[in-house]
Image (cartoon, rainbow, N blue to C red; front, top):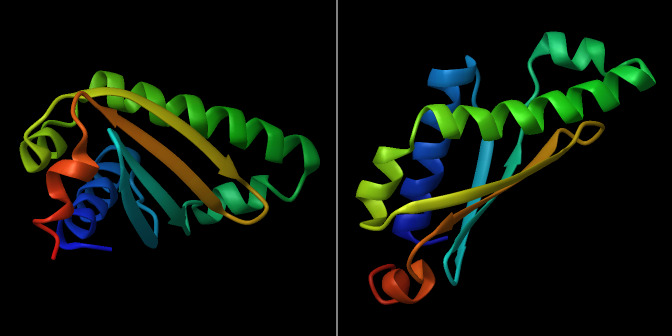
Length: 122
């Protein structure tokens, strides 16, 4: 993970902590074309882990978390991310595996950030 991917990971963690009360404990970001792909571990709070003990709780948490994260970025435009990458945020795709406490977020931007930052990361 290069310098810009690491900084992007830090921005994701602080954004989620600020707007959700808790950020992931570990994030790895990879730039691929116009995507910033974030793999996240340690997403769930103790209360969410308790809710996930029941099978219907797992499904409820997955649906609630994915929709909540997408809505959070709609309501709170990620200006810091755009400033770091010097391009515009377009869309977000989110999923989480509740049992493994492993999430994926794919941030879509209006430029090829992989190409833009490939040489700057070295």
